[in-house]
Length: 210
Image (tube, rainbow, N blue to C red; front, side, top):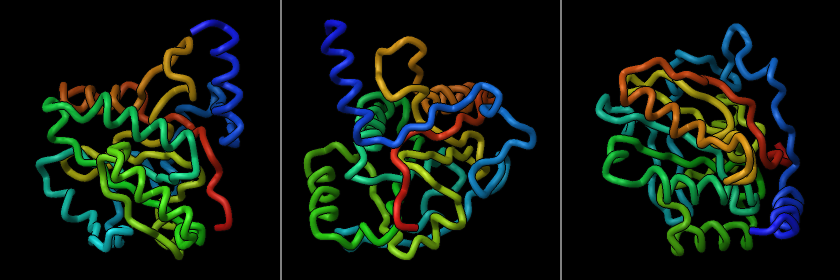
């Protein structure tokens, strides 16, 4: 990709995202907050329905034999779309069979027809490989404290939060310094290590109307 194409792609991407790049001093504050929760807290349980009418109950995933990633999603957010593609392409192989992904979409926009059609299309096209529970009244959002899509809470096999924040370090895969932070955290846990970067401020689209 040439420089002009790269810059054009960056402009198009950022046009859909109200971006707040994290400051270095805020990436690992003490104590380590994770939205309204903290690193080391148990993931709060919730029960939601998908647009397909299926029940998503978090306690069905936190059974002690899987790592669990809860990620806030919106089909209207290009940053969340990119996250779903990264999950599909980089974390869906057999070596990640013990990682369960659960999506949550919050707020009144989840009841808009075009929004629901877009989410359904992402599922049908294989962009989203995990279920997305609809949190129309934002009660789950208020418990977790999500403010942007995407934001991820990653728990170990005991259900305790070990990583929180942006799934990726920048909005442009391939850019200088780009890392899939949630993948790095999963790899640390699978290797029996402490997560090297347990927190990274979310970047992406603001969740509106909450």
